Amino acid sequence: MIAQIGLSILLSGVMIYAWTEYSRAPAIGVVSMVIAAAGLYFVWLPSHATRLAGLVGIGRGVELFLYVWVIISLMVMLNLHLKLRSQMELITALTREIAIANVRPAASAATTI
Amino acid sequence: MPGQPSTSIWLIIPACNEAAVIGRVVDDLAWRGFTIVVVDDGSTDETGVKAGAAGAIVVTHPINLGQGAALQTGIQFALRQGADTIVTFDADGQHRAADIDGLIDALATYKADFALGSRFRGGAVAMPMSRRLLLMAATWFTRLTTGLKVSDTHNGLRAMTRRGAGRIKLRQNRMAHASELLDEIARSGLGYVEVPVTIEYNRYSLAKGQRLADSLRILVDLSAQRLHR
Image 1 (tube, one colour):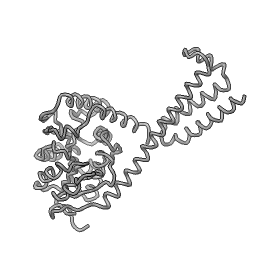
Image 2 (image 1 turned 180 degrees about the vertical axis):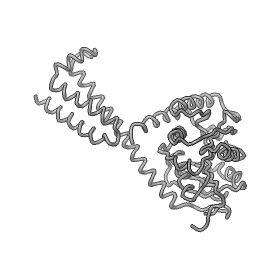
Image 3 (image 1 turned 135 degrees about the vertical axis):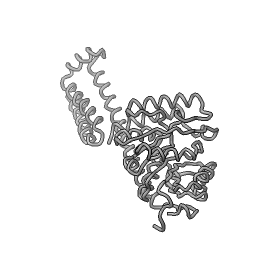
Image 4 (image 1 turned 45 degrees about the vertical axis):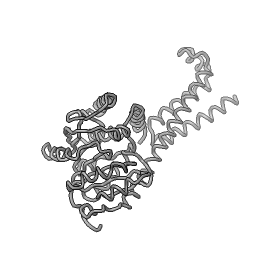
């Protein structure tokens, strides 16, 4: 019971995180939420997890849960990568404005602005 | 603003550490009467100084962002200065200045908003086979993803009208910008035309060019962009 509560808190955290990320990266948000919801379901109904694990050829339900957790971790990593890209876009916009504000005019009169 | 540009045709040359060739490239263009803008993308050599001395306006990125970012900076700057026509041109000296007129004429003749240089309709001097295969794969990919019937997707020599340039918002800072630009053209619904141009490869430009690992990075960049807003 203690493990189930602990895992539920963790997976609920993942769901909240996925929800907050949905507006910025919809694909990541939806996939993370679905996986976390599935994780919650199987935490409380482990026999279903074992049955599903058997169906997909994994063996035990706990192993299925482990694999799901690995997928969630990878999704979070991908999301962090996307977040870094967004940060880079902000840096680019700032750099661009600084560059344009400090233009060095041409040496010759023909191209002076 | 102390004065107005001498011509409504603006040439944008993104450059990073091109001090060895940028002066000659600008010299070769300056006498034709274009307004030349070199976007110095955080060079650690004297690219900006040499470009300025040769007669170009120099816009300097304080840090290196990539060719795509430099192009977008140049386009944005030229538009703010009132450019009517914008031409993009590579800094490594592999384009022919004489091809620019053909691109600009094509905009008027075909009433297009984009004129895209094509080495496969024109010529490619001393192009290695590996480069040819890489470019053909990139063209195939771009035709598939954009629907544009283009023959050369990574050619830095292009011309665009003010209206066309206003529709280009490059978010790909690095080499994926060439595919992204075609994506933007397809999305804009504006007219485009391909114009034969000649690219002359030399040891310098080949050393600066893209390799297979770069093309994989381009694919990753393009895929990542589709995952977030």
